[in-house]
Length: 110
Image (cartoon, rainbow, N blue to C red):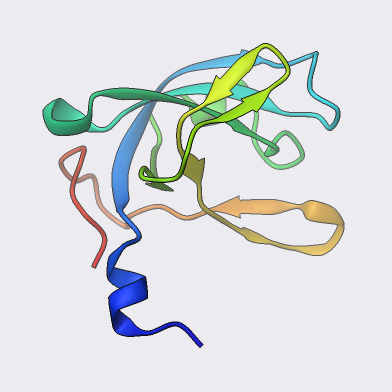
């Protein structure tokens, strides 16, 4: 079990996807995302295996929730800088977590 103190170390923020690219080098189908987390954090990159449910057009300008304080992860030649959060369904079919209403980029999830 996590303690409340453990949970508080996880920095989850709202960001807007500003660029979506195919990631043909990935082992499993994925997109390369650039996400704007506002002035405090800036723009971070992420690789996301969300191609089953989302097209590139669906993702552009969409607000999402991501963990921004994990260590960077090298995926092929791409450096992922944050972890986009989603609910994992059958056969790794992921539904992104997002706010119900448009909010300011960089807001912390509490």
